[in-house]
Length: 130
Image (cartoon, rainbow, N blue to C red):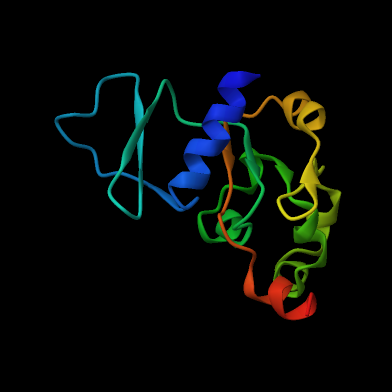
């Protein structure tokens, strides 16, 4: 559990924006490297197959990875853009959200390889909460 919390904190610190890095000589066989927007690289044992998005759910559709998503934040259920793209997003389980809290037990039951988080509320959430 400490490892998962550590992983979540690392991703928060990195801004939650990750993208697959270009294959390079430093990429080891059997490893998968992701790179955040600041250039920080994180090496994973394998390509993530089970992903929980606690923010940035629009990337699910931009990257075409819906088949790998096992959880989304509760705020995805009220995101007007996501609901237009995919009304069935509400069928994906949610362990909570970053602004009101994440149920760690529910998150662990999802058995994610990686958890994507963001360090800032999305603009529509900030506007609606005023």
